[in-house]
Amino acid sequence: LRKARSRLDWSQVPRLQQRSTKPVNIGRSLLWRFGLFVLLPTAIIAAYLFLIASDQYVAEARFAIRGNVEPMGDASLGEFTSLIRKHNSQDSFVVKEFIGSQNIVEQLEKAIGISAMFSKPRVDLWARHWSPQPIEELTKYWNHQVSAHIDVISGIITLTVRAFTPEDALTIAKEVVQRSEKLINEISRRAQADMVRQSEVDAVKAQERLRKAYLDLQQFRNRWGIIDPAKSAESTSTTLTSLRRDRFKAESDLQVLRGSNLDEKSRSIQVLVASIAAIDQQIRQLQDQLTTDGIVPGSVTNMTQALLEFEGLQVERTIAEKLNESANFLLDRARVEAGKQHVFLSTFVPPALPDYSLYPRRVYALAVAFFCFLVLWSSVSLVVAGVNDQRL
Image (cartoon, rainbow, N blue to C red; front, top):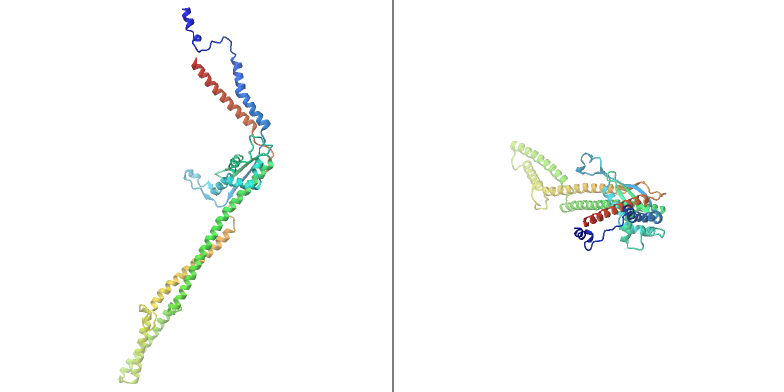
């Protein structure tokens, strides 16, 4: 039995190590691994942070896009919808995207040379910008060093600029604020110029319509030979009334003469009959002018047709005058409004020269690194111990 037990001992199974008879110091082994995998990397990072890493200074500015305020109109906000206003939110986001765009990077590179500011020889190799590089790489580095945050409630934009000297941080922050204000002014100027241009086009159209209305009236007068058909019709009606009164008087006189037993061939009766016939002819001519459709023989104009056409031209002229007056008023108003600045950038916290470097945050970064290495080493140690335990 003793011989069989010795043969079945696990330490004798092929390809397994022999049992170690040497005592193992677990505390020393644990401390050695902790120092190798946790303390040593933390010490390396501490050496970089406190001995090599360059100081980074932060210049901060706060500004807002001022102008017309509109409600946001978001039903999901409930009763707080009226409290939250949209402070030119679109313009604010335009400025934010502009600050992080390649356009402003190109402008500042030409103006102040930001790549040289971020790639000075005194800057450590890890944090510096390696120049020369394509503009796309400079834009990526720019977005790491410069950020803009929008407060949705108040509409305030907070600009943060990190640089390796206080002067560079202040210079970059001032340039960014200046370029952002220039962008807002250009947007406002374009909108105002478009408004004035459209108003001028409308005013020209209204003036052309009014001019055509007057020309049509002039052509009407030349064609019909009438200055004012309404007054002519009124004069014709007055003449008709007078002629009818004269005819009535002549008929009365003729009845009186006939009642006096005068001969029909007498001179007085013949004169009155001739007068009544002449008056009837004049009345028919005047009635033809007012009622006959078209131009009657003898170049007599149709007053009704002339009145109808004249009134249409008068209505068109009145409408054209009103439109021209309205267009000129809108043009004057647009020019006055264009002289004002409706949207502008208001900087209430201008950039200031920083005195103390805020980055890198050495103690915080070192604590985070130590915690990460500790968690990583603990996790790996637990996994390895679990695997060894399953093998046994």
